[in-house]
Image (spheres, rainbow, N blue to C red):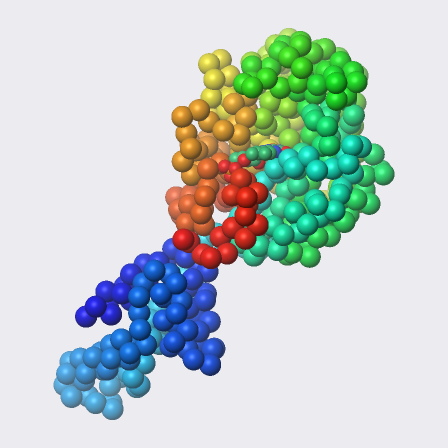
Length: 431
Ligand SMILES: Cc1cc2nc3c(=O)[nH]c(=O)nc-3n(C[C@H](O)[C@H](O)[C@H](O)COP(=O)(O)O)c2cc1C
């Protein structure tokens, strides 16, 4: 009976592990199906030997014969000695059809098909040239990750839309038409790998250090960022007037047009991690009393203007995502309720997807390191909007992602640092 025990363990693993399941199913087409099946099982930590399966098949056959009252050759279920293997695979095939592999499911976003629900979120590598152009190391870095069949979308690292919004030396640029050719080669390696490519557009606001930009930083209000460690140069920025706001809206639209010209499938407006649009959104950094501050609705006015300007500039076929630092997780800061309200406004204003992360707390959350540490927010947002919601933070394995999807925490799961460390993340299934 041990073999039944082993097969049941293998079944439990295969339920959660679509890669293992697919590989086991593929043994049907191999020259030595049973021995390949046993080899995969052993690799997955369940020791099974060919002889065990064969004798299990025989046992099963004998049992069936008995239960069908000596049915013998007329047994309706079994015709050969490795039938147990076939029955097992049939069960796996049913699981596959029932779609238990949630992370491997496709999703259509504004007419673009992502092959899986796993997203490589933007991770700044700061490997560009001094003036922000794409370099060879970036092509191989992104190419290697886009080739990973678990990855459906690659969002490239935050790119500055104007020199005054540059956060760091060697940050990627999307501020001039001269950036387009390099970006096109970046998009090409991502598409060659089979993933969709989305460009993250950013203005750092008060997080832009004057030693990088050569000028005074600007923001919603003249407030020093409450982030730890400090961002920018720690001085109070210049409060933006209407003309400056209009200019930033225009700059986002111009950058999105460049992303489109470079072949990207979409653009992501960065409004998280304490950068400019997040500074407008958070009550900790927006103390304005005009049309851009005060109520949450007003703090979101610039977001609406940016989305509308971008959509108008890129047309209907381009994905628009917003990375929303929905909650500051700080006293007096933005709340989960705010993120729900904001997501609805963003959806109404033309966003096709919401990528959730932290606000002034940035992309981590004090006291939390578990997979999906922003899921209290993503669940609330997901229940309120009909566009896909992306949850990122703390996901280590495919099985973490599968669990979050199964618990309806999000429609898409971001995997940042793990993919940064290992381009082949998840390729061995759920171990
Ligand atoms: C080195 C580093 C660079 C990052 N750069 C960006 C960025 O350019 N834009 C952005 O929105 N988030 C950025 N993030 C945040 C990640 O997208 C992600 O939200 C975070 O790493 C948490 O997810 P993880 O636990 O899967 O790594 C960065 C994170 C790290 C560690």
